[in-house]
Every structure is written in C-alpha cells, then in structure tokens.
Length: 597
Ligand code: ADP
Ligand code: ZN
Image (cartoon, rainbow, N blue to C red; front, side, top):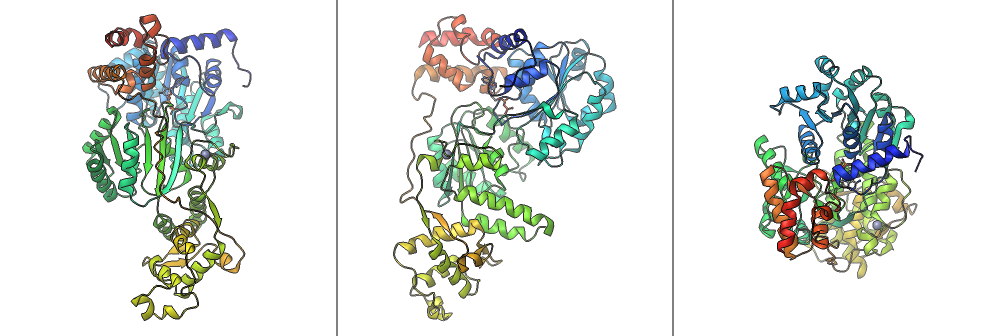
C-alpha cells in the first residue's frame, strides 16, 4: 500500500473508532487509504465496487472529525437507508429531504454542531439558501455519493450535480470525497475535473466481487430454471425480466412453483404498489422480486443472495451493475443469466433503428456481451478484463471454472448452416433451415423445392444435434440476424466464415443439465435451533425499531454468535459487526437467547 498521509497515531485512532462504532476488526480493501486521506484533509475520488464499503469511508471520519460531513446523495431511499444504518451505530445523522417532517430539528442540530452527517439531494444542495444555511456551522467534509452522476460520460448524468462545484468552492478548506462504483477511465477523469479533485486523489479499488458466483446458461425453461435456483437459495433475490408483461407472468409462475413470497416491480405499476413492494423486499429475509431494470438504483440491501437475468442485459456494464446488487454483505451469492438466441437477434435488429452515429458503439457493446455469453473460459476474467484489469485466467467460482465446457471447431458446420440460410432466400426461421439441412421429409420443404438444393440433407448424426446451439452461437456473434418476420439472414462476419476467412469455435452444450447442488456452501446453518432463535429475535427487534433486520445485525454476525456462544457482553462485543451502540442496545437480549439454547 502507498504510504499514508497520516501519523500512525491517527491511524490507530481510526482503527479504534472502527472497532468501537462499527464492531469491525479492520479495514477492507482500500478503505484505510481513503479514510487516511480524508482525515488528512485531502480531496479524493474513491472508485470501489458495490459492497466494498464506501459509506464507511466518510461515516468514520465524520464521527472522528469536528464539524459536520455533508453528504450529497441522489435518492431519498438511499439516504434513508444510510440514515438508519448510521444511527444504528450511534452516529448522529439526519436527512433534509421532501419526505422528512423534522426539518426544524435537523437545522437546529446542524447549527448547534450536533450532527456528524447531514444528507441532502443535489437539487437542494445547489440552492443559494442552502449555502447560507451551511455557513452557520463548521463543515468537516463534503461526500458526493454516486459521483458518476456529475459526468455526461457516466450512464446516469444528473445536471444538478454540476451545481455542486460552486457550493463546495465557497468552502475552499473543506476536503471533498467523491464515491462511485462505476466509472471507466474517461468518466473518472471527468469526475475529478468537474468536482475539483486533483488527479493524484484517485483511489481505484479492484472491480472483483469474489463472493459472487457467475453462471450463464441457455434458457430452455426459465420458470423451471429459476425455480431450481430459488430452491437452492432461500434468501432474498432479484429476477430481471425484459418487459412488464414478462415480469407479471414470471412473478405469478414463480410464486406458484416455489410457494415463496414473490412480488413484481415495473414502471407500469401504481407508484404506491411499487413503493410497497420495494419496501417489503428490503425488509424481507426470503422475498424474491421480479423486475424490469427500473428496479435497483437506490436499493442498498446487503443480503440479496441471487440476481437472475431471464434475458440478456443491455451491456456488460449493465450486467455488472445489476449482478453487483447480490452479496454486498460479503457472503456467497449467485448471478445467473439465462439467454436465448432471440435475445441477441432482436437486440441486433433494434440497432438498425438507432441513429447511424450510435450504431457502431451499441454493436460493440453487444459483441462484448456475446463474448461473455459464449466464452468457454472464466466469466470473471472476461468481466474484469472488460473493465481494464488483468485478472488470473481462472477464478474457481464461475460455471466455466467449476465445470469447464468442451469446445469444438464448428467452422465446417457453420458454413453449411450459413449457406442453407443463404440458399433458402434468408427468409425462413431456424426450424425450416434445419429440416433442409437434415434432409427431412417435409411438405413445405418439398413445395418450395428446397429438397432440390445442394444443401439438402448434408448434415447428419452428431452434427445434426449441434445445429441448434450453433445457430444460437452464430446469432450471439451476429453472423446470423433476425429478419422483420422472424426469419434468419446473414449478418456480421457471415461472409468471411463462408469464404473460409473466419473460423467458428463453439461451446458444446452439457450432455445433461448438470445439477450443481453445491449450494454455494450456503453459509447459514440449516435446522440449528440457536441460529433460528437468534434470527427470530432479530426479526422482533427489527419490527420494533421499524428497520430491516440487516440493520440490527447481518447474518454473518448471527452465525458467529451461534458458533461461539458468547457468555458475556464483553465476549459478545468481540464479534464482527457489533459496535458499542449495538452491544448496549441489543446485547442483553441476544445473550439471553444464547443462554436458553
Ligand atoms: P458500498 O456502498 O460500497 O456498496 P456499503 O457501504 O453498503 O458498500 O458496505 C457494504 C457492507 O460491507 C456493509 O454491510 C458494511 O457494513 C460492510 N463493511 C464495510 N466496511 C467493512 C469492514 N471494514 N469490515 C467488515 N465489513 C464492512
Ligand atoms: Zn471463473
């Protein structure tokens, strides 16, 4: 690690506060570096993946420094989530949003210097009255959450973020800490510039999420496939589906098939129903939400155990962000994508509707996604390389690493398939082309005279079984595209393949869909009466305090209690995730449960 801009004493102070307030034994990843910079008054841009623990990098200094840390955050739901966690750890925090009724108290507390953290939205922060208000008390730090919103290069530009600079410039001595999980190089430089942070203030953590197990499979029966996943993973999960109709349909069928609580979420629902479904999901320990991509931003639920995609996401960036919502608590979690050839064919068809200038860029995105889907190698390696990292060749925690697929050179077969598509006039769907190639007795084939083509009956045996997965692979790659009426036509590098200038490698489909029961070594003990009782107590306390159970304690903390059976408050206090405030508030209650079992 680079040398830290702080005296060892001050770092010790920080570690001590980390233990006392959060109950954590040490910093994770590059947290320490960020905290040290902030404590030394140096402006910083921290780019860290979801779940790395970004909020701690300003909450901890906020608790240590005199003055208030002003946090800019784009969503009320996010702010309230943070507020609950901060308060549960005994940090003095407040929000100023349109959803709050306690404005006067909050403003008084700020003026009296009694707030560690003050959360506001960018549109409020950029108003002149807010500047006046802030000058009434000392500010320790400006923290800008979701900082990619300041850049037009980011995927989520919010013009209000541009107004933050003048506000912060009015307090030239107050350091700035910008935080984001998603920023490519261009966006990072832009954020630094827009927020006035020096270039050497960038702290870039790796993108890897080692606790997420990636798997990408062909979608043969989504209800059955996702049901199986849900049966293996009893915790909360998110299923992304491409359209409102599919969301509704899948939600109903999954509820039926599994008997678990399943709720839909999409922009077509009444705002109230949407909010209610989201709130129940956040509070739940076993709910599954089926949603369009409208769902997710602003969800800070740490115990999501799986994210499934019932169709392809928009890009690798979107995939990484969506799957990143799994396993923020660091416990094992799964990301499962189910894809069909039609997903790519349709996406490629829609490219044609885009303005000329954007087509190439979008095509490149799809090609990258197809590369991820079709790779016989490590999924994580493909993902991390996409984000500019240099990962090991294998990770041991994705479908391809766990059971390496077989690869075959399918160039010859691809040429047969493509030329059959060409010779039948590029208007028929896969079924017809397949009949022609395998020489099937078929009325329609005969009527069209396709039994007289040179490609009639040229594929047999094992090869015939490969035609369908090959057609999928060619569609993912773009060498086959959909016509308006659902037929197949040549596209991409089809002509190069036909001429023998390009080759086609394909992943052989598994003989049987292997049942990978190995439930991610599901960490929670099943049927342990003590663990169940601890969860029950957590549920009761959560209802009483009106917070989601994870705000009280994470699963990992309960597991450690059940395993170590602490007998005193002092012993209990050594468990990760139990700070002084929580020990005082809940310690006795949990000790009683442990004694009774
Ligand atoms: P991010 O905002 O980067 O997605 P969060 O701030 O929500 O991540 O933190 C993710 C989880 O990691 C939280 O539940 C938090 O309590 C936990 N966490 C953060 N820092 C540490 C640490 N040093 N040790 C253990 N757990 C941590
Ligand atoms: Zn891997």
